[in-house]
Image (cartoon, rainbow, N blue to C red):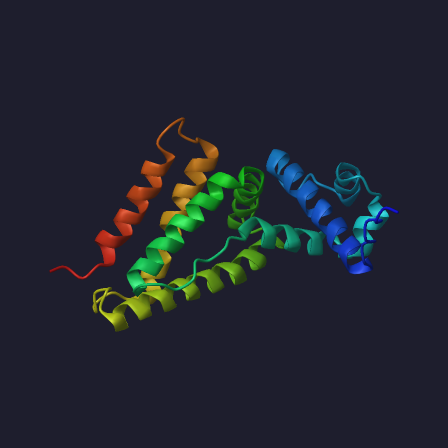
Amino acid sequence: MTDRPARRTQEQRRAETERRVVDAAMTLIARSGSRAVTLAEVGEAAGYSRGIVYHHFGSRERLLEAVVDEAQRFDVPEYQGDGLDHLVRIVEAYLRNVVRRTPAARAFLQLWGEAIAADPVLAPLFARRDADFRQLLANVVRQGVADGSVRSDVNPAAAAVLVVALVRGTGLQLIAQPPVRGVPTLIREAARSVRAAFAVTP
């Protein structure tokens, strides 16, 4: 008697469907931007009908929101050591994630460009998520000031803006024109620049 594979629950099937739809949408967006992408095209690319896509997401706007969430996702390192070390690890993790997740990263590049151009759907989505990211970074800088690893004259909010500019600019460069060699060196130099900018000098 052989064991039969366990049947997937409805929740598992739903999660799998949504993952496939979001992955298909990211691939299409990475190729041609979001404006030309329809629910029917996404459904076909994912192996489903337009109706299935609509059933799970309700609208094109909700699907784009899910794509933005997935494209921006990366695992924030756990807090270890001091605040400056934590900030550096976040920078390194962000850039490594860009290198590893090329389709998602390319979709992010397309969507961010559209958001900058004041797309009525994407602009508010990115504004909210960027504000959350800046707040996370500012809190880490405050921790660094409190534990003495970051200079006391550093403004946490301003530092957060600069770090976002660093990781976004470097990340977009890695996507648009990835170097044949030297990615680890580039990430190392980005981390070094953060230390040089905010570390307490002897």
